[in-house]
Length: 219
Figure 1 (spheres, rainbow, N blue to C red):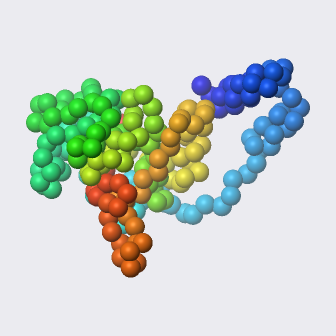
Figure 2: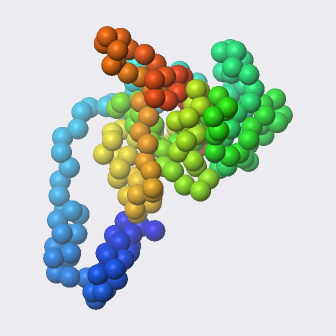
Figure 3: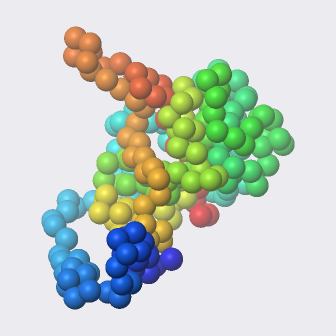
């Protein structure tokens, strides 16, 4: 659904709830025209190498970052990371990732929302923001929000083609491809952290201790 169609659907639901006509009003037409023409604010200079900028910022936020040439290499890359960290080979993952050959790589993956005992969660990402090293994740029937929040280790798979320059670009992509927001949009910039106790930074206070990003070049 494109952005204009999604906006119209939202207006129609509001009118129906208010027992009003579904015809577009002049005020709504003026508002839509203003939003379409309104210039965006200034943005920082990001440079042309979005992957390098994303990696730099993600590492600065305490992520670890790996790259693979093709999506078929993702399971092996996940196993390399888990073995290097001594984390075991059991994980939960988004159902949207069930087409990858996890078994051959030697990892046991359950395609369901995580439970308290699950220590590793594997997700995709709607896109990544080069400016800040941030991941943008959308919730859905096959992309559970809890997979990036509950386990101690979060592994995110990001296609290189989905790395955008700025947060404004991320929202523009969301509007153009999704039309309207899902129930949850999560922005992840490194492991969970807090400085509430004596101004000392503690990782894993409200979510994962680790965030590992695997960038896939063929997507």
